[in-house]
Image 1 (spheres, one colour):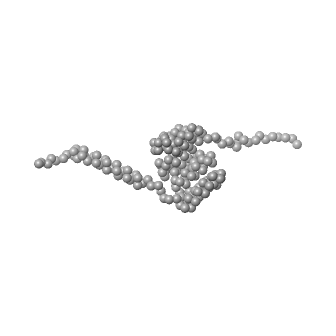
Image 2: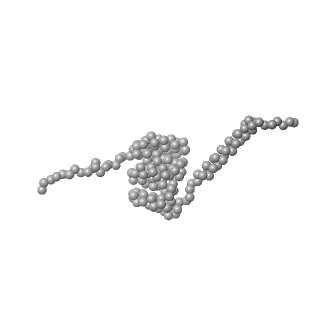
Image 3: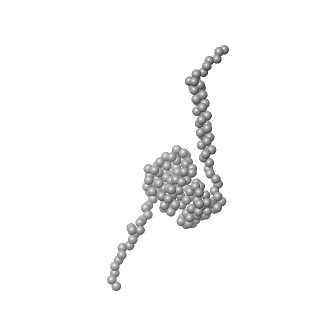
Length: 180
């Protein structure tokens, strides 16, 4: 039996599929290792978050926002705290500030369904339905049409923009001059 010398072309054709498969395994493994859920919430921050939920249930949204901001100083960039703070700001009618917190949460966890849905709802409440529809399409791609976040965002888009707050100038009474 005689052995033939393999050419560079033959080597390339034989080992390219194996090299590609190996590189895909390496890439997917490294991306999974880098996407951790993050450290556990500090017990003091967790107490402040639960206190804020009680305050919101009692109707004290401003105090709840204060508690959540304190929790954020104890656990900076914690997704759970950012989402709670964004939701509280939306309840307070401050969609722009809520969007800021949702986007910070998405920087920490880009595939967080609650953050994507919350950002979309805040955008819909502001009247930015085109951007909200982008979030809806992203949610549909991640979890489908039957998940809760997709249905909530779809309903928020259907409701349309929230009522605008009345400015102080619009309700300022006209002065009435009377003679004594």
